[in-house]
Length: 601
Image 1 (cartoon, rainbow, N blue to C red):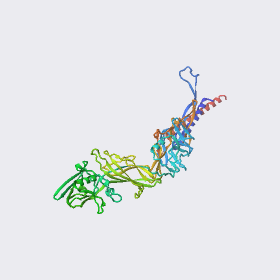
Image 2 (cartoon, rainbow, N blue to C red):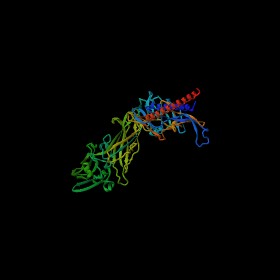
Image 3 (cartoon, rainbow, N blue to C red):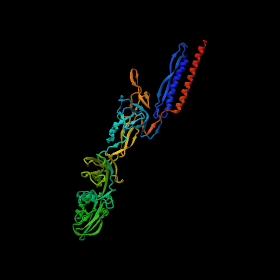
Image 4 (cartoon, rainbow, N blue to C red):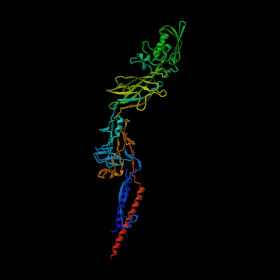
């Protein structure tokens, strides 16, 4: 037999191998996540012809046929297209999804190796679905592996309200099958901590003074009334006193032909300079200087009149009284030459106090809603120009009420005083509020993103609430972010991570072996007497911060086959032509043998 037949025969077999590989690529042109094979050839063997010019500088080799060298996997990415599948996802970059046949298995990836209780496979086909038990599976029914935060127990999602713990666990390396039950409920969480951020503007909201200065029996709370800053008062038209402008009150008293005049001003100078800050300061000035008295208006039974107003009372002698100044004008106390007998009085218009109220929904262990209500009353407007500066002060009363806000659930309201310094920074210590048999840690200093303020150019408002309580909810939506972290959104507005999809990468993807079903597996071989993985050990797809290192996950997308149809058809023709030419060479070799045999005839 001549070498022509041997060479052409090997060429036929080699090109048949190439045709088989390329036709398989074309057959999988629409297979999701398929990675095409690239057939490569090599010469079979060769020999040196010493008989041809052995002393020549030209090498004379004799080659014998060809053989398949490899059928390498192309690792280039396919195209990506959007889908509507609830669990469809694609991976863009270096790496693979991890699946396995064992529902209770695990796959642990360390820096120096890996541990597995079962065979695991790798794929770029992210067309995942959910089986009857709620496990994420691929089209072969293999379980999708990833990090599970173990928040789902007996069909109930139990939140831990600890983002730092979640992030730490999401960066770990022990992968297990992912499970998301269809009928998943969110377990209610008892509220134990509430942080709010508010803006308190002393000029935007007001409350009738009797709601502040009278107790439940209708009696005047003397200390509270006397310590109230005069600049923290408004008239009945909701116009603040604003002592930067309306800062004085004048008295003119005529008695038996003698006239006395007095002028008092809002300030820090004290009685020696006829200056006052609080209602109590003004009461003392008026009493000491004029003999008149300043009090709340009262009825014949000496009870404060509703609505609450101020009263100038004459207990000295019959006089003619004139009251002027900007404070008197604002409060409706201005009179001119008013005959005022002993025991007579003159009342102001009703007064009001800067006020605001907030209500925050909180939840008990059953997910039932209650209201955490706070009422804010300004005690002192503050003065940044005084030495030392005086902080703006508010009294806050807080208690828990039923959801309608009618019945107090707390044993009693908790009172505290908060302040704003000259920089507008709040000074407020957390308090504890009774809530059934539990306590709520409550802070007015600020929420997660915003601090509390007293900006005068913004209305009083509740800016943001941060709390750990949650009502019951049912699963509404699932989404996966670019790092493969799976978030569950519930009907109660909560969206929280439950785990992440596992991603593994390899130093040598060519070392993986296809096993059908769009899956690949790790293979080993003996190299220099040592058994090694051809792909190298698997590498965890994310870093210590939980961020993917080699690519990103694209939710509701699938990766198409990476087969280039144009190239595949071109290579198919080339293989066909190579096959035909080798067949022609085989036929020629056969004819030559026949001719040689016929020479004997």
